[in-house]
Image: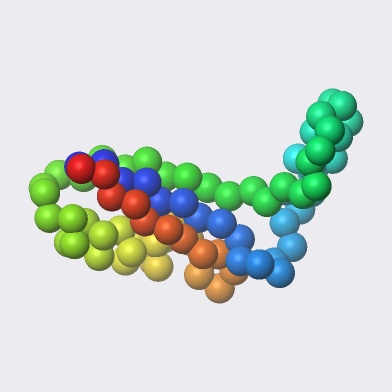
Length: 80
C-alpha cells in the first residue's frame, strides 16, 4: 500500500522560503506568480492492507514527527 503525506504551513504563518522562491521565480522572468507557499511531501510505502490502521498510524507519525502541528497542517492520502 502506498501513502502520501502532505505538510503545509497554516494560513497566517510566515513562509520565508516561499517568499525566497517567489522572488527567484520573478527574477527568472516567470510571470503571473502572485505568491508561493512551501511545504513537504512524504511518499511512504506500507505493508498490510488495512487502510484505516495505516491512516491512523500515519496520523500518529505526523503528530509526533512529520509535522509541527503548532504551525503546520497535514493531509494523509492512502492509495490502494
